[in-house]
Structure formats: C-alpha cells, structure tokens
Length: 318
Image (cartoon, rainbow, N blue to C red):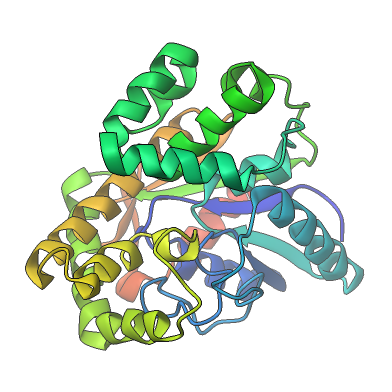
C-alpha cells in the first residue's frame, strides 16, 4: 500500500495515542511510534508506554544514545515492511524533530564530540545554562531564539555545531532538503490550554501512583546509567533522578516534572503551529471534537467515535 503517510501529532497528554489506535483498527493499519522516550527499554511508566503494538518501541537500551537520523532510518524500514504486508503505516507521537528527520530529511551534521560536550557540561555546572544560552545567542541568534535557556541538551548541540563547523547551526539546518516523503499530518489538541494542563497533571499523578519513583530507582541501581544520558534526561525521569540524588525533595521534584511537561507541550505546540499543511483536531474539556459549527462527536474515555473517523475521511485525511 502506497500513498501519503498518515501522521498523528499533538502535544503530550492530548490523546493522540487513542486516536491512532482507533485509526489503525479502522484502516487496517500498523502504528509507528515517533517518541524519543518510548524507544528505550525499561522506561515504561514515565514514558506512558502503550500496551497496543507499535513499531520502534523498546528498541534500544537506556545506556544508548538514539538520534533523529537513526529514527528516520528505522522508520523508513518499518514503513516499507508494513506496506509490503498490504497494510497502512500510521505514525503517532510528539517528537517533532523525528518527524522532521523522516519527512523532510536532515542536513549533513557532524557527529557528537564527547570531549567538547564534557567541556560544555563542566562550564554549565560552573556558570549555569542561561550563561551558555547567552553565548549561543551571540553565535547563533536564530537557534537561541528557539531554545529555552534551560534546555541543556539542545544548547549543547547548537554550541557544539557552532564550534565544530564555524557556522551557526540554524544556517546548516536551512540546507535541509525538500520534504522526502509525502504525508497527511493531523494534530490533536485541547482547544483550551487549561484543559491540556489539567490532563498533564492528572497523568503525572497517575504515573507516580503506578510507581514512577520506583522505576527511576531501579534504573539508577543498574550502575551504568547517569543523569547526562538522553534517556535519563527525559521529562519526569530527570526530575525524579534529582530527587533520588538528594539534590531536591520529592514535592519539589514533582513540581519541576509538572513544569517541565508543560514546557514540553508548549514547545510541541510551537513546532506544530509552524508545520506546513497541518490539519487540526481540537477538543473541548469534555472530550468533544470541535468544528466550525460546534461539537462534532463525543470522545468517551479518550477514544474517537465513528463520527470522528468519518469526519477525517470526509476531509480527505484518511
């Protein structure tokens, strides 16, 4: 089966997984995860790992570093295999850099330099991440404008590219080739920010009740993981790790995890607003899909109704 890829995007806790599962069942599809935390084994509770089968879930160890370039390669392999089986690949997740790598391609970038990264980490410990962000603003204003002053991983990569190439990372990324794969992209999100924040808070409390702290403790006990790894810098894991390290108390760690998740959702929405030819599906506080003439269909329990599927079909999305 060929044709455009169906991509279900949206901020964290928006309900996109439930929508994607319903579409997979209705369209004889298979799901491909587009999530930088779900690729890691043993990150189950804090990543909200779904029970429904997805490709590209649990494919690497938390000690590994998984990149957007590797995702694009793995996703293409999965897409081709699904199509050979005569089924429809459906991508779902909120890691927008992964979508960009797959659908638009990535400009050639130098590999990470461990020594340079260590130097930047030492400087950050001494001077603070806002100081390194200020340096990035001098070297690459366009990248700095898109990166939060405390988003350490992105600051390190942008400064690393500036140092290794002598050019702003933003200039290198503008050399990215045209879209490599045709796609139909849908974004699911609550219309009201307060509704999204309430869903984020409820999900975090559910994760804590399910044993998030114990999950992070088991990861720390392995002995081969550290707080600087991408897996352990995932939202929620990083803050609980700090609590277990004794650098903060549990209440403060939970508050920081909540704030970090809200910031993640804000960054995802910023990406989505600039995504070309995106179809939005907005929901209200009661889980109804909103259209120009009001609520279209209820979504009890977060599961889309047949009317929503029909709406997508009529809009030439599915």
